Image (tube, rainbow, N blue to C red; front, side):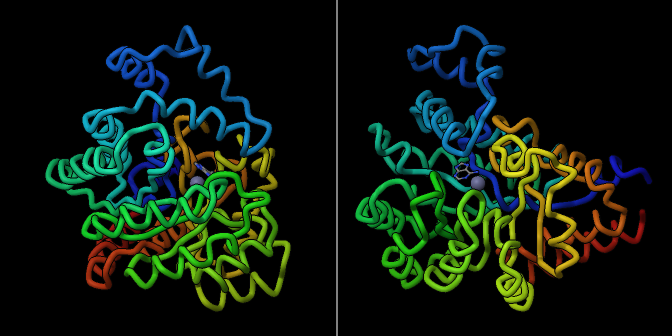
Length: 336
Ligand code: ADE
Ligand code: ZN
């Protein structure tokens, strides 16, 4: 089986995906029209042309602007279901999705509107496609910790629907330590902690995420490789890392994918997975990320299968669900 067919047919999970980052320019236009909002672009092509980012902040500025077209429960349903339909076509069997409630409540959209639209789509995808989904609420790290506490209070009313809390947005200058108290409270309330760390920020931020936030997964983590003792620790504890190759290329974290650290991560014994982050903005969904990194690093079949298997091991599925998913995966692997 050639690599592309293996990637496309392999059962897999996606663990690093911002639902607002799946907003395709076509849907942005359609929702702007439906909601009577004017955009500063006159065509889908001119939006795509603007997706030329020099840094994470360049991207975030457009990302927050783009999501201003999301207003109603139906909008959040349409956005989420469109992503899950694509994942069904890409043989993704399980997803763990980030959402940024503060980016919506900050412009007058209620927490419940956002959450109910997303959960409606999860329910429909489970019944239509058999895809399972978990939701991760991200605190925006450029905002004060007090505002994260307000958001956590809203999440505590909806524990049935929110599994984990994460940390995203502008990393530099906003270390995990800024959110130590709200993460402690979130853990006490039963939410599983994860955080973006070491995307643009230094290895020390990854240490803080582990030590202070007690994260059970590191989102990105690229710059952890600058600290060998930290790498050894992450490998020993098998803390999963959610790596996003096309994001890293588009945000100039690793402009040349041939120099991407994914193979070094695998060789160091890290539990790494491949994900898409914000696929509409970065040029591809999960299978495109697998294909791009396979071509850049010439990954072989057993490396691709290890990455696919890791996606289930690194997930927050229950032990029984993991065993069932890995059974299916191992039957697939034996057939290639
Ligand atoms: N929000 C959406 N995508 C993000 C990323 N790659 N890093 C930090 N915050 C984000
Ligand atoms: Zn991300």
